[in-house]
Amino acid sequence: MLRPFTLHRPDTSEEACALLARLGEDAAVYAGGTELLLLMKLGLLRPRHLVDVKRIRPFDGITDGTHLAIGATVTHRTVERSALVRARCPLVASVARHVANVRVRNVGTVGGNLAFADPHSDLATLFLTLDASVELVSPRGRRELSLADFVRGPWETAREPDELLASVRLVPWPPGTAAAYVKFGVHERPTLGVSVALRLDGTDGDSEGRGGGARVADARVAIGCVNPRPARVPAAEARLTGVAVTELEDVTGAAAEAASADTDPADDLYGSADYKREMVAVFVRRALRIAAARARGAEPAARFPHAVVA
Amino acid sequence: MRIRLAVNGRAQDLEVASHALLLDVLRDVLDLKGAKRSCDTQVCGACTVLVDGLAVSACTYLAVEADGRSVLTVEGLADGESLDPLQRAFLDAGAVQCGFCTSGMLLTARALLRENGAPTRDDVLHYLRGSLCRCTGYRKIVDAVLTAAETAR
Image (cartoon, rainbow over all chains, first blue to last red; front, side):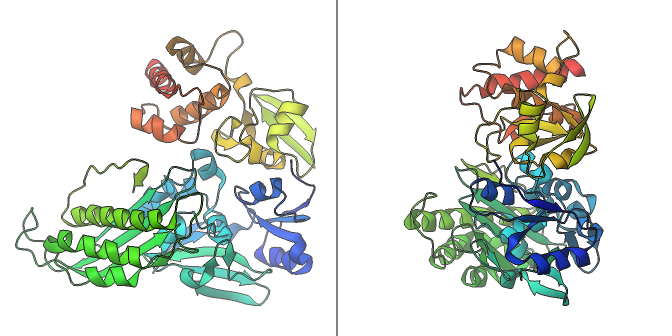
């Protein structure tokens, strides 16, 4: 059961921000409701006003330019099926296909997912490897913030009370980038998410990758769900940068250990801190092996218990 | 708030509170008890209904969101005495045990077949993720969905 509230349905971001500014802490931003309504049912949040942002037109589109901009009220399902997302950021479409379950994907939005900042989530971890930034609008104008600065901690972001998340902007990887997203978990929400992207320079060599000069020019590794907020792991990335594609296998173990050493998990229902550190090592290694295989033009038939490979 | 919607093909004109959940309106106002309240957190799928053909958790969906839309519940699947091919296949495969998850399974499968008339076993498993059967009768449920897809082709 939900407690009564007044539902506002502004057509413009100006109206919505004015409502948020006027209503202050009595108001909550509402889009898909897949996170918000759950907390309201539990009584953990008791807003007297909901400001529905789904009628704000620029928020529901996906646009392409130097970056790919996904509007805040675009659903996971729309991302999954968007020809534009598939063309520009194919891994984003693949991961969208595995967010929660189909009912949540039909209703839940990209902006809601990011603004809610549940630590057990996929998108922020993936987006960190795509140099993501968020566009925020308020009565004071617009500002752009890196996703790393936007997500401050569990359920905490840099969004001001009268600000709205308008879109997330992704910088598509250049051609020749090998990437993978792997998530693991036995609960409804993931226990661990790992996103890796390896940008390759040089020639590919023969069909087996032999004789080629392809090297990792830029490595990105992000870990989600085990720390208070998702983050890139520079120590792991450093182990991979400059490594020849043919030698990637030799460094995946060291990179995975570096990632594990850089995490600071807590004991909770998802597992003990030690267990999570071990799982980080296991799944960073697996994700890197998948990306390394993709770098060689292969698609490994990788299946791991309780894990999803995208 | 006033909402006008179609439920199982019948026009409805209702006055609902802004905080009313679609599940409660279906069950308590329209007396359609097929969708169940179970986990109440969008995890289990027992409350699944289709809104404009898309599967949603009616337990976490405001009734006012259905304004102007078309809602399908399990009660709307059969055409009079004639069962939907999915219902027939569930019966034939023995895919119904205690029955609590069945309406959600049927509607989720209906949404899948609308999108993909020739799903693989993996497609069905992927789509039914988040539809829980605590009798653990998944194999027969997946068999039934595949059979219904074949029958429809």
